[in-house]
Structures are given as C-alpha cells and as structure tokens.
Image (cartoon, rainbow, N blue to C red; front, side):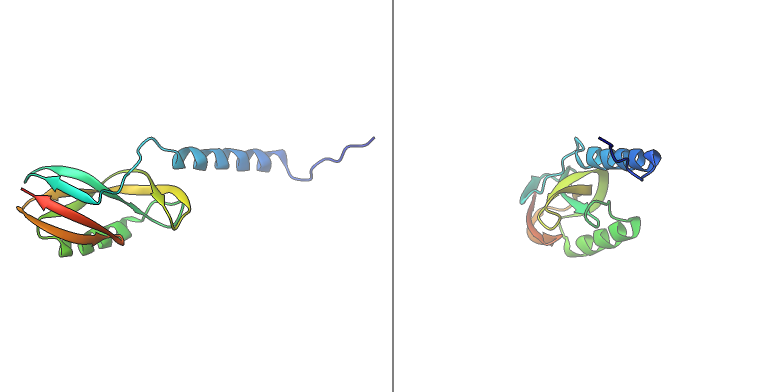
Length: 127
C-alpha cells in the first residue's frame, strides 16, 4: 500500500504551526483585564477599569488609543484615563478573549458620574 505525501513544504507547515502557537499563547496572557461597572476611589488613586481592544485578535493602534482616550477624557469630570499594559479581555464581539490595553482611571476631583466607556456604562465615585 502506497502512502500519499503532502505537497506542502515542511518549512511552511512548521511555520504555520509556530505562528498558531504564538497567537494562542498571546491570547491566553496572564494579564486578564476586567470591566468594572462601578469604580469608587479617593482623589489621587488609580484603577484599571476596562480594556480597549483593536480589531479582534489585535491590539489597538497608538492613534486609536490616543483618540479614544481624548474622547473618554472629554466626557469625564472626576478624573482622567490613560493606558497601561497589554493584556486580554473578554469580548462578545470577538466571541472570546482578545488582546487589549488596560484603561486606567485616575481620580482627580470629588464627585459622582456615569460615563459610557467603549459602549459600557461605568459609575465613577470619587471622594
């Protein structure tokens, strides 16, 4: 009995296997970014409140992060946001975990406000 050999070069198959392993490992990062619906901080404190994702499977670009931070900061009166470390977050649109950047809220002014961040409401309470 004769066996059929694949016509794909071994290097191509090995490269695809390595690439799929790297992507899977990256998406399974230990830095899991969680969405916080309610954030209660004192002035001067900071906390990761959400994760900003790019296209499914990719981190957002620097230009997109700058634009989104400006948009969120324009809506805030009790603090400001900045980006932290990369990680992964759960995304319904992406059907699972996807790479994201930490969105950090820094409390600057006492008050209470509800702001929509990446389509999700967050209640900020600053004392």
